[in-house]
Length: 517
Image 1 (tube, helix red, strand yellow):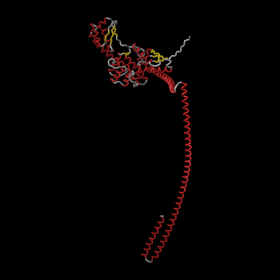
Image 2 (cartoon, one colour):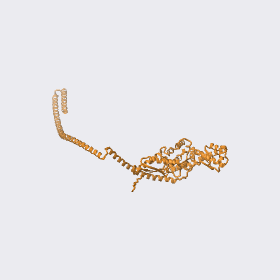
Image 3 (cartoon, rainbow, N blue to C red):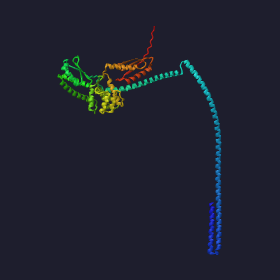
Image 4 (cartoon, rainbow, N blue to C red):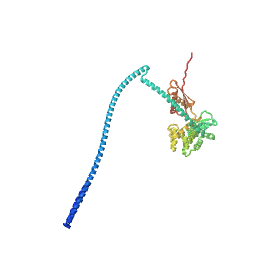
């Protein structure tokens, strides 16, 4: 189309040019040039016709080409549309088949559902019949056995519980035996190793309260004229003198062991000197008091030097020295503390703990006993307050507070000190005990064991180191005996304070006896 317009435009241009040329020729040449102009015009017309015909031909060819291409494209589109229609027809056929299949399946499912509902009703009827028969059989069995369903269940549960108790007791016994063997082996090895490295004198040292006299005449001299000497001695020393019919001896009485020791040395010095009167008594007392203060410091420094402990406050050294004049069940408190320190250091070394802290805690664990007769409170409380006052390590303070179980141990060294304290106190010959305390401890031990059900008799033997319990065989079986022993052991640990260990032996004996006549 554009070529046609272009051709027409060229024709018009050609005509316009021809007219102009003719006009010019006519104007310039006149009539002579008219023929030539006409010839030119004729040529221009011919050229224009030719150009028009060429353009028309080109337009026709282009039109034909476009028509062919359009027909080809239309043909291709028709083929694509036909293929799409075929695919759609195929898909519709498939969907029709699928719908038919689904409809058939729905009909089958509906039929199956109806069958299941019918079967469920049949099963429900059968279950009702079975339940009815079961109830009749249970009622018949209850009638025959003489037990209701609940009673039978309780009986079975009780039997299962008894069986489980037996299995649990047997399991606990087995695990305890294994743990005890392993713990005993390791603890014995550790303690024996430490005790071999440290051994001390086992003889008891008791505070001497009796002063021997060379003769009975010396009693009169100590009493003095109108009792002035004895009054002076009691006034300056703070100790009561008991002079009775005991030959060649007087007794010193005081709750303060340090004062009692000063009074003893004062009287002995006066007896040796021979001059006994109030002024001389005061002089000797002042001298002995100064000597005793120096002696106390010496005892404290010797203990620190023996243990290799340094950086201790001066007042604390004096308190350590005063432990020499304190006893517990006849055991010297300072020697006991030194022994605990040595054992604590050895055990700490075996366990790769701080040896010096362990020794320090062992030495100071009973420091409260140095002044517990002067201040209200237990030696544990007083000792922890003293340790805080003199800025001791928190580990040492915890060891002091927990060595009797009053406070929970928060570190290994505190536990080590408690073990060493028990070991030092319970070794043979370390302590003496009064008859009243001994009897009370045995009675408490037997009372704890007798408090359990099924116990026939209890006997505390070996000075309270073992408790033997005889159980009633018809109430406690063999496996139950282990459970009773464990319960007694736990109660003893929770309620009694004792050094060392207590062995619990449970005896179950069955005797079958008949008499032939």
